[in-house]
Length: 346
Image (cartoon, rainbow, N blue to C red):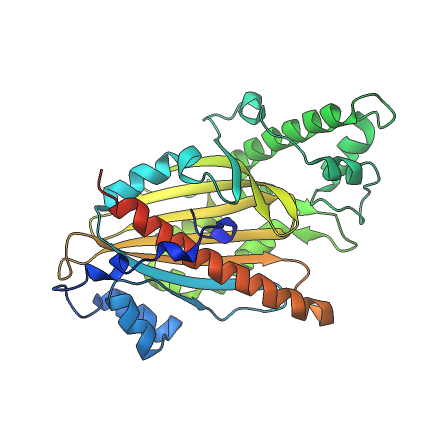
């Protein structure tokens, strides 16, 4: 369960009446910082505010360029220590497991080729790679990657599946190594379509269109944009890759996850570095905000923003509706699953 936990496929039926029953006797107000953000950015209805105060989850679509971006806010009160969540997310291989997550593997520091030993390509991806070229490919790859598949795989040989996967593993290893050395400047330039798509430019543009990030989390914003030249004191971070089920295709993704703990809040940022399908880039911010007036738990706030192709034009109109619905439902399910998991007696 993770937000863009666009990939969580858990039943909303997990939200039983017990999810809000524990709100009795707690403060009937939101913390000032959360209330300010809701009023200026999210603008929930009175009914949604009441649901949140009563302990239930809310989700709202945020303003974004509908032709290429989906942005969703989610929040819920969790009656558990913040440390319980941090411990869970640090065990990322078990935290993002099940449902839409087929496999999650933490990447060692420094990365090793063996970290990708379990990476597999769907058979239809391998078939598509046979005819991939610059400007026309079903997978999101840069020019270097496209050239590697054309020249290093014997497409008339006996085992193209194994050969293609070996190339993909090496490319993934080189990609994360490059990112750790050079940051966003070393992110991909996708050449799957006629127009090159610069991941770094899209990520920077997406972050710059989040003014609240500069207001509430200026150090995190700078870190996301300027890593590794800029570090975040008292933060821990790691990279991981996973195979996810989203839409009609299984997708290989690589993320950079950062946990920054402070006395008044904890911030978890998950930055998508690569996706083999659908996504150009994505960012999920999770803010864990204690509220002593309410109790010993915390407000769990998530902001998911993702950019992808296929959302523009007449056809994109219909795609947008489906994608937005799936994203909102996924965030809702992730909030419920996170709450239930952390509040479960140990």
